[in-house]
Each structure stands twice: as C-alpha cells, then as structure tokens.
Image (cartoon, rainbow over the protein chains, first blue to last red):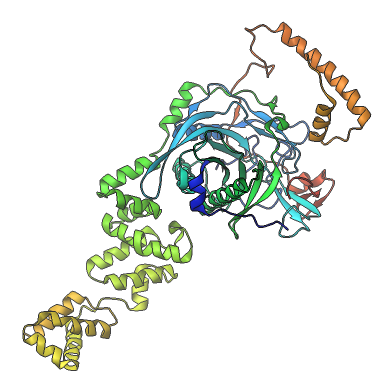
Length: 500
Length: 99
C-alpha cells in the first residue's frame, strides 16, 4: 500500500516557495508510415499487424528516415520560433525494456533538429506568458504493453506481459521547454495553457491528431520547488501519465503541495518518475530515474546525418499556415471583438466553430452568442469538448436564420438546438416534428388574447385606462397558452390594439 | 589514462543485465582498460583539424517517401517469438521498472 502523501495548503506553498517547471510534450506525427520503415501508423489496428523486420529489430534490417517526418519536425521547430540545425544526427538510447524490441530507442540526443525557441501562451485572464523552448527532437514511439495477472493492468504483481509493436517506430517529436520560472501561484495554469497552446499550434500545422485521450499528445511535467529568494533549483520529479489538459494543471498543483510538505517536514525530494492518477488527482512514486549516462547514447551508425539545406527550411517556412495567434487577431479585427470577447471565445474553444457558422451565413454576433453561451453550457453539462457536440456550425446557422425570419423565438430556437443535440435530425426536421413554429396567425393569437383579457378583467380595465405597462400580465398569459410559440412583441401589439 | 574500476564494471554489467562474478569483475576491468587505452591512441594521432567521425560514408539526407510498404503478417511476426498470446509477444514479468 502506498501511504497517502502529506500536502501543504496551496496558498502557503506559493507564499514560501517558487515553483520551477519543465514540460516535455511528446507528439505522434500523423504520417502515413513509421519513422524508419514503411509500416502504417493507423490507430487501433489488430495487434502486431503493422510491423516489419525494421521496427521489430530483426537482424539485418536497416532503418531509412521518413522525409515527411523530418519536414513536420522542421515545421514544428519553425512555428516554435526555433533555430533549425544545419547538421544533426540520430543516436541510440540504450535500455532494457520489452517495449522496444531493439533494446534501444532511436532518438536524437545532443543534436536536436530544432532548438532555442519560444511559445507565447495566453492565460485565462489574457495575460501573455512566454515559455522558452529548449529543443524539439525526433525519435520513435515504443510498443504497447499489456500486463497480465496483476491488479488493474499494472506491472506490479503481473505474471507476464504481452507486447504489441504496432506503435513501435511511429514518428514522435519531443518538445522540451526551458525551465519555466516566475509563474508563481499561476504555475499550474501556465502548464495547462502551454499544453493547450501547443496542441492548437500542432493542430493548425496539421502534423498530428493531437488526441491526448488516444496518446498522440502526451505531457510529462517536471516540477521542483525552491524556497523564495533562493536561486538554486530544487530536486525535481517527473510526473507521467497526464492524459488531459485539466490533469496537467492538477498534477503540477499536486506535486507543488506534496513537495512543499516534504521539504518543510525536513525531508528531501527524491528524483524519480511519478505516475498521475486521474481518479484521485494524486501522484505516486514510480521508478528512480536512470541518469542520462546510463542510457549510453552514441551516434546511430545505421543512419546518416541530416543536413537540412537552408533552401529546404525556407521552403518549409513558406508552408506554415496561419498560426493560432494570427488567426485570433484576424477574427478579432473582422468581427470587431473586444479583448474580453475574444478571450471568452478562445477559452470556449469555439473560434473555428463560430467562423464556420459565419461562413454558413450567420452574423458573427449571433454565431458567437450561441457557441459561447448556450452551446458551451451544453458541452459543459455533457462533459465533452465543444467541438464534439453533435451539432454542426451549419445547423447552428440554420437555427439562427429561422430566428431572423421570425419563424422561431429565441426560446423555441433553444428547443430546436436541444432536438438536434438529441439526435432528432436537422433543425427543420426538429421544428416540424416538435411543432415548434411561432404562432404567427393573428386570428389564433387574438382568440388567446381575448381569452386572457376575459380571465383578468381588472388588468384589462387598467390597460383600457391607459396603464400600458399592465399589458405584461396578459402577454405572459398568452405566451403560456401558446406554449411559448408566439412572438411576444406581436402579442403585446395585439393586446394594446384590443384595449384601445 | 583510462583506469576502469571494479565498481564501474559492476555498474556496466547491471545496465547490460549481465551476471558477472566477483572474479570476473577484476578480469573485465583489466580487459576494458586495455581496450580504452588502445582507443585513446587514436586520440593522440587525431589533430585539432580532424572532426570526430561517426560515419564511414560521407553522405547526408538519405530519405524515404512517406508511402506504406508491405511488412510482415502477424503470424510471420510472431513466428520467431519464444512465446505468444492473443496475437502479442509474451514476455516474462518485468521487474524493477515500476513499483
């Protein structure tokens, strides 16, 4: 059993310590084939059906570098404001673990393809925090292990393990930050915002699926603390198994509280790998880190060096798409948004959805209104990303058009959206099936108005006496009688007409 | 001059997952020492203007297009495995890597 760690209260942690972060993000590229062989990379294939002698490490096989993977690596480096190496090599990282059948991982060591860049990260309140990028290097993913006989698929207590090498050799880019200092109490937020910004960037570059839930984007969070006012970094831990943006924030915060309690209790932080537990939000000790020398890196003799020509780098630079921060700036200008409105839009993850809704004919304000409020609430309630809601921008645009035509009130429109979300079909089908059209037939409305006036003679008298504001009670009764399907403005006009 | 200690040999043996006896530690320490001394001679000959060499062939940028090529079937892949189960390679339990 693992003892429950003592935690210091967060407010006290940030009062006494300065956190230092180092974030390592692994991103699986979306190339058709693996890094060093022509095996496919599709997710979810039957075990060991996407393998060949090279990625199985069979004798006599030789690796050859995937050009597209190198191009993606260079484009990522450029987008992260990095310098691109004029010359670099792959290296062997030697270790014994059955997830790599070669007994080494082909990686880059002291000669990364991209280095010394930065990424500007926008925090929730709009503040910009610059995160330095140490390096982005190329390597290959490992196979997947299945541990049999232990509890919950863990290695501990397992009788044996089963290996699927479909993922072994899939191109991986590891992006490493410089030490992130000075974030103070916002360190957990900076960590989440950084991974979010990186994900958005990689998505815009179209180099990866960036699915944290499927492991195509993975984050390891290094955390250390130093007492306020001191300069020397403390001992760090590296937390793995952080599988969502929210977990990045929680894991950093947990480690800060745990380490602070260890340090103030007179103990010392052990340099180790820790595993994040999604269900408890805590981290547990894993293996002690081997030192870098223990991996006995040496230049990979089976691969020749890379020397990306400056012309090639320039060509790739020209293929960079509009990057997320440029995209945001353009949207802000085109749609005339305030900084706060833009921030809400971005935080809701709805910028592209709004853009597509506008493209489908809606006004920017209407489109933004729907996505940032009602639809964001629905996504929240369902616990899904807003982009994963079962409604398309085109359908939202259609609902907005129906309101503009006067066929729906805002209240009815929400019911139509609910119907689409519930899988009842296109907006027009939901309108028809649920009978949600605005009652625009004046004679039907007049009958309801007369009925309401007759039911509340005292109110009717007041209106006749000139107290127009009393009409609200009658309008309310009519709206109720028509189950909200009347246009309240028209009803009001009819009430006043009737009483004059 | 290189001088490999018994502790260093023991450490290397552990990294390589080799079981080495106490007597062998002395033997290998001596042998590795000789090898390192031989390699060090190269360093004496190489002048400042000679860059370290990692590859015998002066080539760079050898690439392959991102096109799927046929690999092995699962049966072929597993054919040489000492043990297989559920279409996967079966390996003994993994010790000392995680608690």
